[in-house]
Length: 192
Image 1 (cartoon, rainbow, N blue to C red):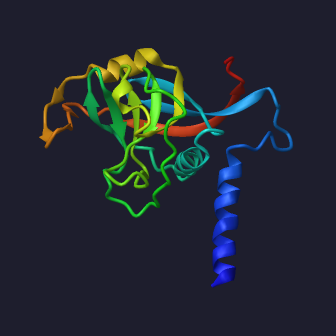
Image 2: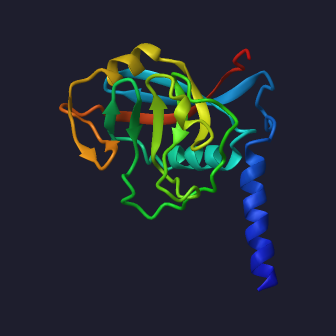
């Protein structure tokens, strides 16, 4: 039993430290890893807040490496709120412990959606189409859009079919907005 606990803790620590690690051999310290989402409306580039949300960042990067998001669509688009993609809770991907509060919900903030359990986030990502301060401290913000604000604006304003699930808007685009390809790439460090 003790060996299993130690093994689990070692794995958790390794995942957490992945967000803090410096460059590995052959990588330039003046670069950082970013996510590139090539969509049917153009390309968006996301910078990570790995130090503040290491588990969420590591989870998202792992999903990208698995090509999980390739071919998925932004199935929820609420103008003035968020655009959202993921599996809708239909997969067995592991959940991530909530990492809340480090960054505000500004336009372009990238967060991990969840249900009422604060540790239930998994594959569902959202990008804020506008500032959403009422969400601050309630969801893990693990990245920020650094390129493709015009794409975010285009997606955020597509024509949708309005549907509600209780108090939650699940506005579905009439024409699919597809993430054709998601991948990780090293880029020069963004200035703070």
